[in-house]
Image (cartoon, rainbow, N blue to C red):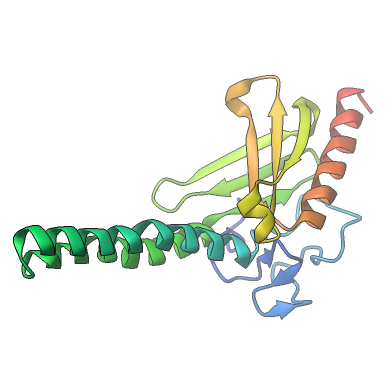
Length: 196
């Protein structure tokens, strides 16, 4: 990975919805192709980040799990053991507060980069993980979107290779970007596997 272009920093990484951190039309700061330039992806292409809807979706799911749990704990423990013990309901709320911050850090850590011969995926805050998927090794590229993802206008791109352990996934893309990435990776995979 090049210095200064890693996912996770507000250093000109384009969002997955085609906008940079400053809003629509913001280009990358590392001199690579802009998010709107989809034709010539070279080794110096910019890192692309997942759209903000992914963060909103994950935070909503966290809140839907922790807030009812806090209410249940407060009600049950307060009823059985007394109002002082109902303070244990603050534990799920503390998890909510910590998770709120950690989810933002995790969202910023995700990025993908289309290079000349492969797709590079990077993610993780404490344990950094980078996956390189050569175009010639791809056997299947599919776009999936569950009911919750569809509600937020998101889709995921799943990459299948010959080795099951090397399968990769780019979650939470806007459907247009997911379809564009699927079509591009499929075309590049066919070209590389045919030896062109």
